[in-house]
Image (cartoon, rainbow, N blue to C red; front, top):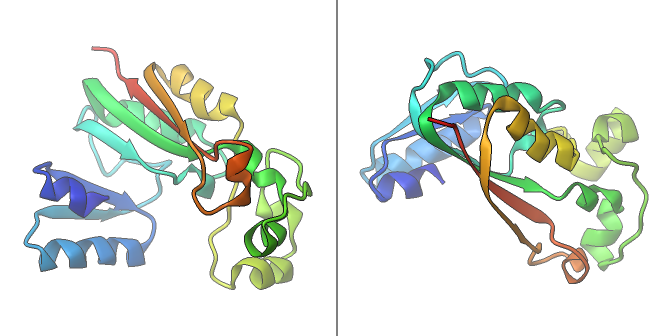
Length: 187
């Protein structure tokens, strides 16, 4: 998303814990002549940035890579200027109920997991490698209290909410898999 926002005229800083992802963003920016800054780090620690540094924090579906969201919301609040906007996308926690293989390979909805979900506790290291790949990132589901309530607890005011189905997933006929919030840091 970083290069797209830069192409639209925004001054963009891409913050990610994946050097590979940052390299992709930098490659696209260089290829297309876009100005873009990349910073490696953990979303729970934005100490690379001062207080009230940004007008907008765009946080796409990435919460699933951290076990606890409270630090994420506190840090987003800290780095936003008063009146700044937080745009967040996240997975419906119910999406984690289903057997991944049955859903992806056969479009079958088979409930096998308890929520909140963590593939750390559900699978051994060997099972994780077999199901998701040896280098796959760990995933965690979060309750709506952690997702939405956490933003409110950090001080944000929610001003918008939307949901959408997963376009290529059998669960789409029964539920929305993606949620998005629009929140503002009070000025």
